[in-house]
Image (cartoon, rainbow over all chains, first blue to last red):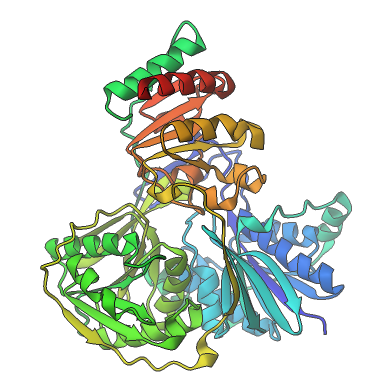
Length: 269
Length: 331
């Protein structure tokens, strides 16, 4: 039986952009996107697409639908998933979705997943690289009422069940759960595949379904900032107080010796 | 529910017995919140199988009450059983604030528990305070480039707390508190996902999180052999070797050595960042270090912004000289 898989992806400011390009508008409590720095698919979400593709490859069949909640530009990250090899895309876009928290965004995604129906596995990245919160995936699992395995480094479908290897700081654990279920994916899964030119061209031609809050049967006060349970009281850039003492010398040896001496003088070693 | 009161923390045990370091840190944070005007008591939830004996340790670290939930299905962690058990404890204790560690368990359990309770959670907080009667939850975001302060519109207000961001109280064995037992109802079908196997990475020598000196290397080390001088310096100083995510993803070092937002958090007295650029992803794991020493070819590298001492140079040349100088000093 071919599996129906869904991957939730998010468009984020490029985390590889230089720190100097990063600015915060404290009054608006928003990050100002630097001109010329294009937003990208959140890294762990690309790996989540990879995880779904590995299951599809291993089984020789299956359907993968990419869902993203965001502005019209989030179409690009859906296209990225399609170019990697996913089959369909759904964009949840509505000004009412803006500035939601993990709960409000999770509610919209969950409602969309239910609307698509018949889902076997939902994949999400372990956390988005903008807010680094790591709750939306689990929020979806809880709202769908399905089991979840977080921080996956390996996934395998076997005898109607999903076997997940979870990355733990001190090793790993292997868990098993029935379908439907949800998996959040960690970097230990490995690099996401790179879309080939032909796939990029095919993805460009694919139609992406767009749903608004009304299409999902959600009222504007249930989603976005109005539906959020977590408020943002402040957003600012922390200032580093450390002044680095650069140690120099005529030769590398001399600099290294001076460093050792300074560490001794400061009673650190 | 209404009339929520007090702070509930989830206590965790550590391998080899006793409470985990994170538990002492949570209790310290909770006590300081009470000092700052949050309503007490400070309660600890102790879940597991055969954990009752640890209740007094939680009291000695600052708990006024310990709610012990003993159940066979809590002997090892599953998100299903722990969420169900914690939900029952929370409904009984009815706290205004719930704190968990940003640990293996906390990362997995906190969001699930929060949504089960009809509330939400701010993850990986480093700064907790009270403002206008609410819990203010300060947390790094955008890979550490920004700091957000969140509050919760729903009760209980929940946060997970980053390791080593909070000081524990000094243990006071004479401290008095109340130990209550909670009869949790659990069904084997709730213990999902089912654990088939748990494997610990073979740890040699000193534990990274406990090491007083950490010598960490990054992508700039160039390959697994590039870590050889790092091993040597660590051994000369009785420390442990760590690595950036890049070095682990490339397979140069085991994942168990990864330091950063998605890896371990360390707080040694001395932290050597060798050929590490200092991406905020990595810095999230070592901001607790008292002294950072950076060795990097690139004078513009971000790491120098957080370092106390630095050498601009090729680590391949600096390290042998540094190892020799350190060995000489150590006599």
